Length: 193
Image 1 (cartoon, rainbow, N blue to C red):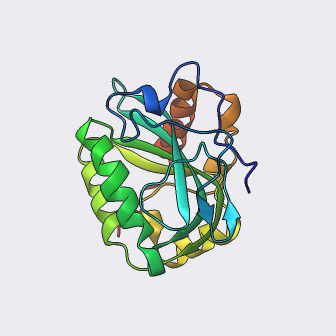
Image 2 (cartoon, one colour):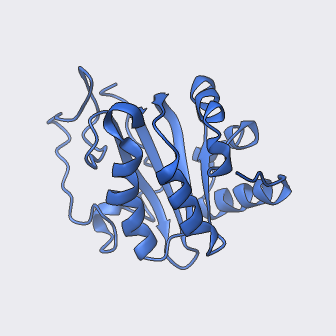
C-alpha cells in the first residue's frame, strides 16, 4: 500500500496544503518518511490523517465559486469500531461546509472495506448540503462496499452505483467531472428515506 499515491493530475490547479481555507493548509510532507498505517501497512506520506485509525484522505480539488470538492480516500471505512464517518464529518466536511462547499465527490476505489454503525452522520451531512442544492457522490466504490452501503440504505444520503463507477474521473478536468456527475444525478429517480 505504500506505493498507492493520491491522484496528482490536478496539482497544477489545486494543492490543499496551499489553500488557506483547507483543513490541511500549511501541511508539509516528507516523501521519504512513512508514518501513517492502515493496520500493519504503511501508506504513502502524501495521504492526510484526520483522526481515524484506518481511513485517510487527500483533498484533490476545491472550487469555492462552484461550491464543489473532490476527496480521495484510502483504507478501511470503519464506523462500527472507529466511527470514521464522525471524524470525516467533524474534522473535514464541517470545515468545508463552513467555507461554502455543498457538493462532495468521494473517490473510493482504494476503500477496501466498510463497517456500519448508524446513519446519523450521513443523514446530517445530506441534509446540510441538500438545503443548498448540494449532494454527496461516490465514485469507483468496490462492489462489496456498495453492497454494505445498500444493506444500510446509505443510498438515501449518498449518490453511488454503477453509473458513477463508470466515470473515468482521473482523465477528466474537475469541472467536466462535476458536469458528468450532475447529469447522472438529474436523470436518477430520487429515493426517500
